Image (tube, rainbow, N blue to C red; front, side):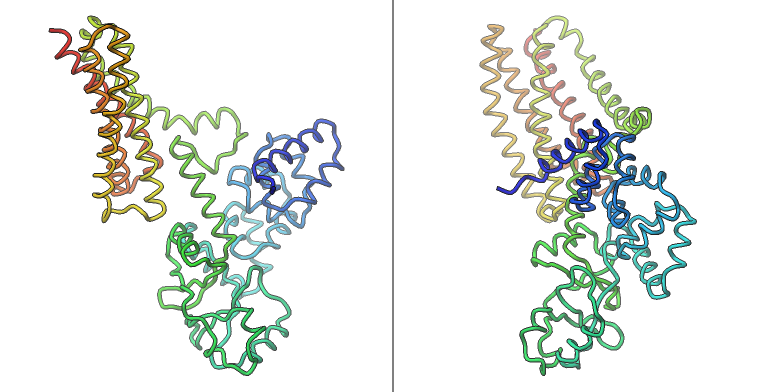
Length: 452
């Protein structure tokens, strides 16, 4: 059975840590030579700063650039700070233009100038083109290094051209067909070049069904196109249909992984580019904003609860039981919120079908509320020998699970409408809603029914 990626990374990390502890640098070098740039990047992100720099000094200079591309922003900054200008120029100079564009802004100005000076005019123009697009767009993802052919030449001419060219860019599975103005017309698979009659004309065999992506298309939509059409690579065009580059599956895998990390971490108010081993004070400061927001919302819930202080003083059982109501509403709401955020990220949820989703989640909230209301009512009534208390508990449970379902559906849509990331702020808003509704429903009903 193929070893899981996480287990493989953990095994490498353990071996590196043991070698660092014993001071066996030769063993570390041997391990590093067997790893890819992405795997080394995973290891470096998993090491404390001192150990990271020791391992970084042992990385083969040939793949240093590839490693810099794969580590997160903060770790990259710590590695670059430890490198000489000569080493940085050599590492960055070996990268493809799309990868170079990803890290260029992190390099010192002197290094950038030296890299640009060493480039020919065509590569500088291509790099400038990639940098002109947002990082999270098709234009920001694309590699401008493409192989193009004309529609009016034979396959034999194309084959001879490729032999003269000598090599192809990485991950090339098709050649793009363009007219004299550079507009994209279609593509020719490399397999067709090898198996079809060399006398055929390119226009007779080219595939016009491969979608050309607009350069301003968001990277999440790019990933969807690759999924829907099972693509290995696809062309990118500007607003005039001019071919400007290509996107390959390896770039899309990075997008999918980044989106997954973003969704998980931002729900906790964290940043996927943060160094796990950053200094304590720096890490603490980065978490202050959302801790402060949560503190404010907690005080809002406490303020609402304080309005019912006389009731709590009369019925101590309420203080013991109301966290059950709040937590159940919070969990139910979080389930709906998570599904909504995922659906919005994949394009499965929009305003056009939000009504149907809302009705379904409300129905689920009511059904779950009734089911669990019966359970908590029986437990509360048995625990305190008070059937009225059980009834209040049941009613509050239904109300709060319903509130969680409504908030979990509506909150992300509203946040997206006002251009706030639902993954970042949705959890805080949802928790506030379910806490406040849970307090008002449970303690409020208790005030009306149990204190008279």
